[in-house]
Structures are given as C-alpha cells and as structure tokens.
Image (cartoon, rainbow, N blue to C red):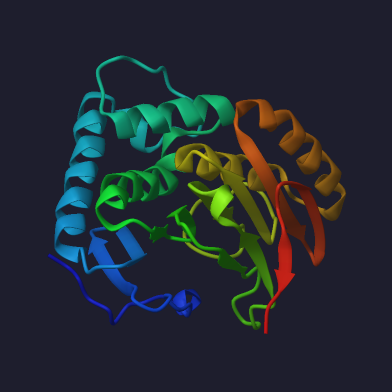
Length: 246
C-alpha cells in the first residue's frame, strides 16, 4: 500500500474547505488527490486496486486495449469502468486509455460520494467533483508561472468532470502542440477523452477556431464546455465561467 504524501504534485497546492480532509492515494501509476469530509484513504486504495485489476484483466484478453490510439469495439463482457472508457473512446475517436484517468476519478467519487457527501477526486490533472458548495478549479497552462485563472462551479453544476490535456505538461501522450485544453462534462471518461482528442488537433493558433467548432459538435455527445490555449491565445466554448485568481 502506498499512501505517501511526499510526492504531492506542485499543482495540488489547493486547500480543502473547513472540516474537509485532503490526502493522496497512489496505486502503481494511479496517483489520486482526494478532498472529502473524512479520511478514506485505505478503502479508496483497495477500491482503486480493484479498478486497476479490471483494466488489466480486460487487457489480458484484449492486448491492444492499453496501446490503441483508435477506438475499440464495445462488448458486453467487461466491467462498468472499462465500458465507460470504450464508449468515451468511440465518441471522441481516440484510444480507450485516453479516458482512463477521468473514468477512475468518477468511479471513486461515485462509489464514496454517498458515504461522505462532498468529494473531489483529482487523477493526474483530471477531476471529478460531487459538491453542495461552490468550488473553484485553478487552470495552469504553464507550471513555471503563478496560477491566475480559475473555473468557477456552482452547486447546481455538480456532479461533473473537469479534465485537461497538454502537449507540454505531464507524461500523457498528445499528438498536438496545444498549451492546454480543459473540458467539462458529466462523464469523467468523456471529458478525459474529449480533452485528449481536442488537444491532438491543436497545433497552431489557427486551429483554435476548429477546436471550438469541434466542441460545438461534441455537445451532442455530452461535452458541456471547452477552454483551449495555444501559444498564449485562448478560445472558450460552452459552460465555462472563468474568474481571476490571486
């Protein structure tokens, strides 16, 4: 079991509300930051370990699941988590692992939310939130600079996922050159897959118009909002209320 706090990522310098706990759960490559009203790290660790087991078991039967950059066929013989990943990948025309972080974040929030009420689960920059109070999510396109922009969310907006993809930050594969793409949806898997797809298409500032047009088209799939930034220029579409920080 790995419940350490020494590897807390720098961008996690946010604060829990009063009476809330913030803690980290790490299971192999899955690194979660969780905010809720009680310390649930041990049961969450066990749950995430089981979720990863579902993914690896499916990958044993379908070896391309972990590496495919295109959608795979959805069958009826896999876990709820894997099904969500496969369906999101089909909707956004990406590989299923493009949806894994958001899918895990939502699964944890949905599983433990009824027990603890408000819960925020962040998984590698992808977030799923259930909350009865307003929340602000900081946006950080450049980790060398201060966080000055945030996304404001009200109680009626929850539950929802806020996911991010970047060609310059983090270890995830991106085929584009965008500084940052942030997506909002009710589905964690869909928001994650959409962020990957849109960031893949963002190579120059001229692509911002295309990205926003794609965001409009993806509303039919459940995408609620998009923020895209490339070389200092920003485009916004949908339900994204931005506020200044600091």
